[in-house]
Length: 464
Image 1 (cartoon, rainbow, N blue to C red):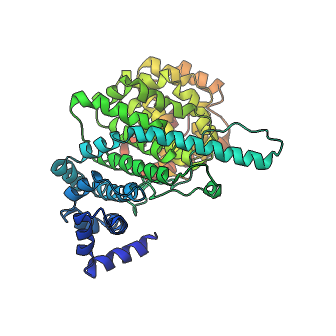
Image 2 (cartoon, rainbow, N blue to C red):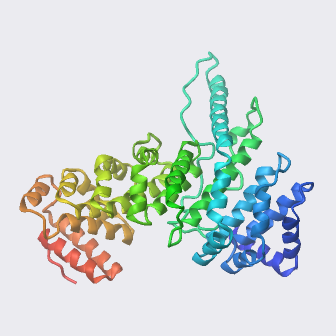
Image 3 (cartoon, rainbow, N blue to C red):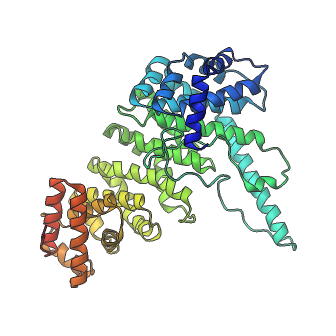
């Protein structure tokens, strides 16, 4: 729904006196009228996704205990997951509204445990769902191949999502389009291949998948705010292992939300990062996204890759042991490929950030980065061509860390031999111009000193 139209609709329901009736329908939870309950839940989830004040109205409406009752109620199969999906959106929107709203759900109603326990309860259904999705993809491919190849020869089915197009900028709530946040799951998903007649009914599987998306997105909203919630120490690893299993689902929205959740978890403390590193299942899934063979131009891959790079960024800014994870994963070999093939500012920014942090690490970590002959020409190219001040800033930090005062002359000579330090007047003018432009945009004294030191090592004059 268009944001302006949604706001008008929310205001109408609130001001017309309809809101108490909608709340009453949800609170009475009449299992004999699931369609009415669903429509009322949609109305309340739309209001909870509105402005901060509108979300607070829902938060203060004494609705949460009734929501948990709805989670535990069994409705007609046609409506069960649809109703619970909308109810889950209400919890997620409140948790994503503010730190205080998140804490209200956590402290008053034990929100994280409640949502996680319901997610775990559907593990068997989720495995069956993934199998059903695989069957559908195989059947669709079979039908397409039969139409394209009357001879009967078929092609192998590649792994792909049923719904692999969604907003590239993930928001906190339905109406907030913010670059670094997590977007709410779609209420349902459309697939042009649905026009193909299937040997079984996929409608229920669609609603299950939408419901699981909602629960995972809601859990990720709990972790967006600081301080991050934690389970009891004994249950923390169990939580990470269970969440990591959802990466196996053949759905990019779920994979994206799990990736964001792990990026929030590794941002909490060194202890949480060590917990993720020690969880081999989670760590293997994180690395797999750097090597996955997909169409690099697809927005869905970039939207999963972005939080994956955030996780590596947290490792790079952590302890030496945590930074070593990047080295063991051959991160910089793979990052060159990403920089060459994905001209997306947020990906470039994250890789430059990681590079600068590792370069400020131990001598052995620094040496591993220095050996990447193609990496730094990529970063210089980003500095000279990017239109984003944020990207240029991180590129300069990376180059500044490379050419910091501790750099050895042998390293400078090696960079010069690799044609990283070019001597042409045009290159010098361009480099100076973009560094100065970024200094002016950043307005940071520390950043100014880093840039000045880098220009000195480049043997370029700094004229402001």
